Length: 466
Picture 1 (cartoon, rainbow, N blue to C red):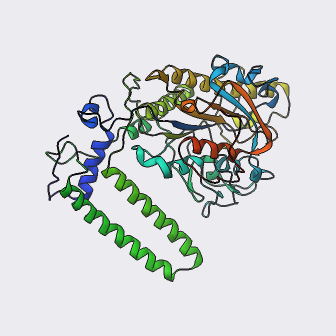
Picture 2: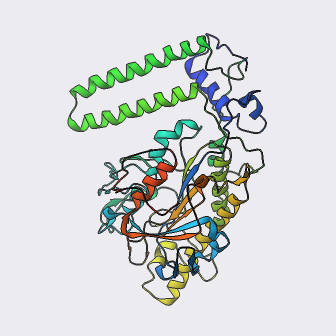
Picture 3: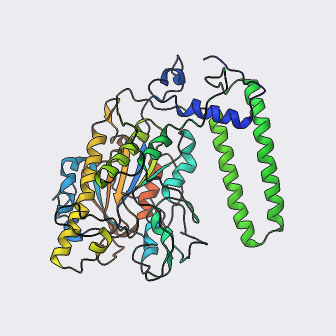
C-alpha cells in the first residue's frame, strides 16, 4: 500500500474530515479494493458477531404468549405464530425480570431500565438519573472503535417532553429511549429513514487534494497529528482538573463525566489513525436511499428502518444496535389493522373486555409479524456459508409482561440467532423464577468479548443458552 504524505497546510480538522471519508466509504463495493489493499491486510478472516436489542412497548397477553411444553417440544402460541417458520432460530426466555422496577410507575421508568436494570429516579427532566448505563453502550465502550459507528440507535416515535404527573412524576423523556450512555444521558435515536441511511455513508467532506488514503504508519503524518491532537487534549484535561479542585461535590461529579468523555474522544481519535480490520460481504443487499421525511404507511416506515439496521450490520458499519417500535406509552394509532380502532397504549388497558383483548392481541401480533419478517431477511443473507442471523444475536421483548396490569415479572423475551455458535436456539429456556435480566446481558457481553464481573444487578452468567 502506498504511503501518502499529509501536506503541512492541511489543518487537523480538515484532515479528520478527510480521514472520515477514507474510513466511511471504503466498505462500499466500489471502493473496497482500495480500502482493503492489494494483500487484503485489513480484511477480517471471518464475519464478526453482531448484537441488537428490539423493544416493543405495552407488553403482551400472557395467555397468548406462554406456551405448553418444554425445551424443544413446546407449542407455538397465538403471539408466536409469526415466528413458527423460524422456531429453530430463537430461544424463548422466561422468568427474567428487573427487581428495581417493581412498585414503580407502570411505564416510564421501566423503559430506560430495560437495558440497564437501574433504579430510575423521579425527575422533571433536568436531573435525569436512570441508575445505570445500558448494555449496548457498555459494549460500545469496549468494541465501538472497531467500526465507524460505535452503536446505531433507531426508532419510530419522536422523543417526548414534559412530565407525566398522573403517572408518578416521571419525565416522559425516560420512556423515549432504551439506550443510555450514562445514567443521565440518552443516546439519540434516529426515526427518519433517509437520515438513518445517510449516517451509514456520511462522508464529512472531501479529502485534501492529492490524498485518497492515509497511511497511519507514515512517520511525518503520525507525528504531526499526535502533536496537534495531544496539545488540545492536554489543555482540556489540565483546565478541567484545575476546575475540579475548586468545585463542589456535584461539580466534581459532572467534571469527572466530562473527563471521561474527553478520554473517549481520545480513544476514538487513536482508533481512527489505525484503521481496524473489517468484514466485507461479497453478496448483495440493496437498500435504496429512502426519500425525505417519515412514510405515512407505518409498515413501510418500520421495514425501512429495519432494513437500514440490517444494512449497518451487513456493511460492518456497526456491531451493536437498538430499535424501538414505540415509546413507553406510544400513541401510535393501529386502526390500519383490521378490527382495531385506537392506539396501542389505550388498547393495552383492555380490562379483560373480550373485544379490547382481541384488538390488543392483534397489535402485538403485528409486531411479531415484523420480527418474523426480520428473521427471514437475516436468514436469507449469506456470509461465507453462514447467514447474517447465524452471526448475530437479537433480543426482542418488552419491559412489561402484561400491558393491562403493568406486570414487571417474567418479561416476554426472545433471543434469536446463533451468535457464531455460542447460542443453541430452537428451545424454551426457563430460568429460575425472578432471575435478573442483567444475567442475560452479562452473558451477551461475554459473548461479544466484553468480560465484565457484573452488570447491573447481575448475579452471574445466564445458564442454558448453549
